[in-house]
Length: 596
Image 1: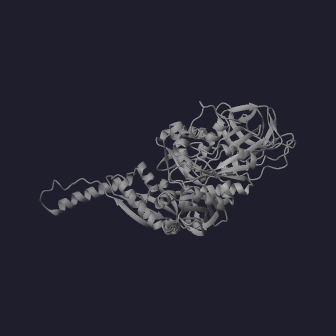
Image 2: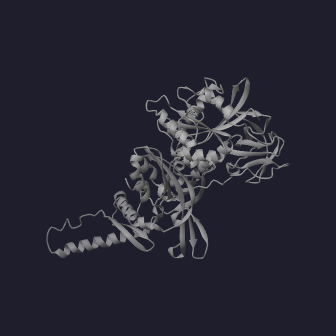
Image 3: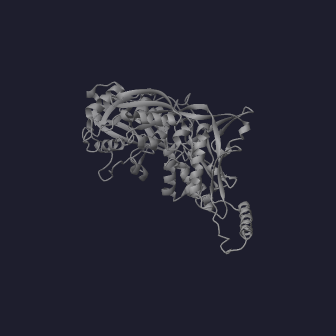
């Protein structure tokens, strides 16, 4: 065990985490020159295009130090806030972390939140200043920021360029020297933490784990704590670029296990594996069920593709266990699914992957969050969809999820960011100057207010400088109302939203104006109304397309014209009773971009 080191890399998006991992793999000769490519651990095209890590990876390297071989297990972590639970499990599997900061951008919001998580788990932190070869690098300034953040000396910060490889080699020695070896009892009952899982269509679910106590061998009977199910181990092994089978994974080491599980839902990240015959006394602390926070409807573009969409979502869920879905139907869009996501980036990635990997084009409705509704009978309901809200008379009060948001920006944008947060019902908790011109703001805000376009707005007003990170706090009472859109007197359920009482009037008016431009004209007038319960709060009318029926009257009495107009009016009235209004797809997308 004393020759094992488990570590992860903590960094904000685009601070060079994957590139640094590439250099470490090269220096330890884990990969041959032929297999080497940029961001080798990011194996999805989408990850390379967006420059983010979506699915975390783990890889074992061997480093020779003072004539002895050390096993270094790099447990890679996704960088984005939506995947923070996966990050917490990866951190729980490590004894140390490389804190990577971009010399041109300085310390950012996600770096800080993941760093605090690592410090809470008692990890040894090795600070690394990356991108020192760039012209815009502020080496001294950012070194001081890192020293203030973790309380180290300036000479302890490694100054490297992951792109060119300059200064990377000493980091490997520092990992061996500074990061402690894993602790545990090799003879004790098996206790292993699952930090990730992937689905293989031939072998089933492959779980990645770190052994805390005991050891695991091929042929062992094991059980999973959270699900209580037991399985036989078909194969265990170590993680290189490919999976390499081994006879046994010992205490403190990282590896993979294949048990022939066919459903990804049975393997939960954060669960504990133990032996059936000699189980450990308790599970490793920190396990949570991953809860989706943002919900949206997904419908096939062609109505007859419903079964095809169901099959695609089943396959997709095998690769992404945090994605959940259930069938629902809508008057406007037909049959589809209500899907739950970890956050907005997760939603965007799922949509993109469905299109790329399964060639499935879907219509996505307005995303919304999950609310707790307390009824007058004393019941508590979880409502994911505005149409599932009980009648206004039955509701005692509604609670909505709140987040704690950390925003780091240049101080010149301080006023504009505060205004944006106040407009979104934010409460200022604290402000802290990191340096003379960079400030950290902490806000409590409703999650529903950041679901739409908060991040885009923040980037716009800060000229791309602000970084944003959040975590869900709790549920708090809110004055929410259901805003319905009526087309020709019929509610269009796909356009319903739950909204704060103070914003309902302006939002309803904007919706009506937008829909008036988007809905094509018919042979009859179409009233577009925004309503809260039975009360209409805004109205627009799409004017009818009319034929000039009086054109043939070139003279004579006015009653002849009136008679023709009355006849036309009767026809329009009849048409309006039986006519239906088709809502184009662009109308659903426009709701998301109301402010533009």
